[in-house]
Length: 243
Image (cartoon, rainbow, N blue to C red; front, side, top):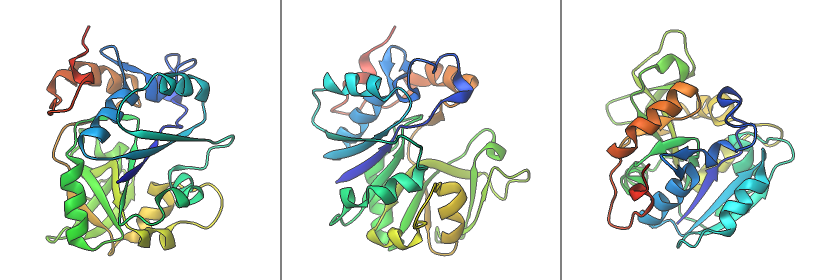
């Protein structure tokens, strides 16, 4: 199975930490976040990932040069940011021929059961399954409303009045049918340009596991405090690194 591991974010809200270090390499108790993601992918049978690069991409390339794990890694550099959906669109050939594939936001710390999400997606028959979590501040997230079957009935990006307590975790499982929902050109973001058009067609599923967005100083602090809560799993190695 393959996954897009989206790692090109600028990390503006985390400056000065991210002035020289890309957000995906920020250490969680001494372990680069990207190493944690690659370990999670390996544990769930993901054989190949595509990582998009932008800010300080050479630092990510240097990190990957020393990676010896089982996941095959491709990279693509974006001179100008394409947006989360734009990256998937412009690199669609990476997933061509796959029954389904994952789209993962690398600025989250998680131990989500990706396999359970894939199984739920396949049972749903939807073009996209949105992994969901219950955030402490839903007004800062993309909020999703579901019907009892798990069909997405509403999506609002950063609402002043959230329509539910469920939000996108930045973890998606997609089928080839997703392509017709992607904008054909220009900058494209899943929350702004894709998910609203999939209301009534997409599936939503609560992730099994912990998730923390590290995109703010407060989130980064919470990730450091929560690292010990992550489930190690039989093939995990990076969880053992601690200060």
